[in-house]
Image (cartoon, rainbow, N blue to C red):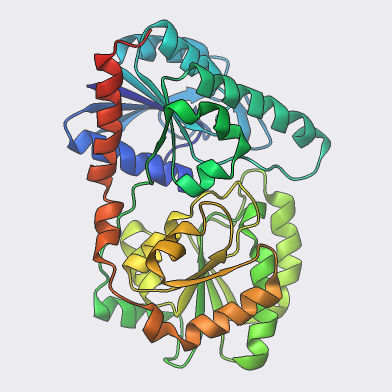
Length: 386
């Protein structure tokens, strides 16, 4: 099957959405399908066409950016050409161009799946007051035109009003997650390199720096944690410099985090093979997300696969990995006092919380997740969607 996948940003851009789609694309390729990813050429240094690990990329030039969004005048022509050639279409939200893609898929009778990764909750501002309802309307039209809609958890589907009109064609498929096992000597070397003592409380956070991630909540919690555990520190892995649309947020955080000195360290984007080492060096991972822009949080599962417990916000979808595994605690979003208390509690009970979850690797296996998409495409093709 020739499958076209479309999303605004793709590799080398790093976000939970791009990683999830990349793993899905790899899984479909491994199952024998030809996969093309249609995305933006958000950086002019990137090639317009490229093959990465068997997946063909088609990047459309960007005229300008509006916040985190991109304007691509040639997108429609490129999408028309690729959709005519494909056998099935996989569209990933949030995406401003999603409605046009889904309408083309329906017009040319291509089995079309829209995957709703999250409901954007934009910060205050005149531009965002206009952009949010426009984007919501575009996404609604895309889901209406699609033959099937996918989201990651029943929990998120039940608590997201946007998805209710599409219940009849809604499928629940978790994101693909995989994580290698870290070599013990590599973990020792990592801890030595970052001057981590065996008695240190090492709090990890992993992800692109963005306002919805609640980094300021962890900063407030760290002040409280340090009163009880003076050797506590935070290691933050992920993109934190010059993040699209987050420049103001980054400047505010710099002032907030400055007093911590080396108790808060940004590691930058880690190579994929170093992520299991990073997770394995932690006492626990935190995910203090604030709103519906976070709908799952794959880093939780990645940490759990490395035997690391998690403290996360009690948000629809986000809470599911902890509820299903028991490997951590949930806290109210935005509550730094509760977060600090949970961090200290999870650190103290770590041996009881870290337990074998062999089904985690199976549940989120990219090959198996790709197979679930494959079955939906096959069912839609058999019905010859009109």
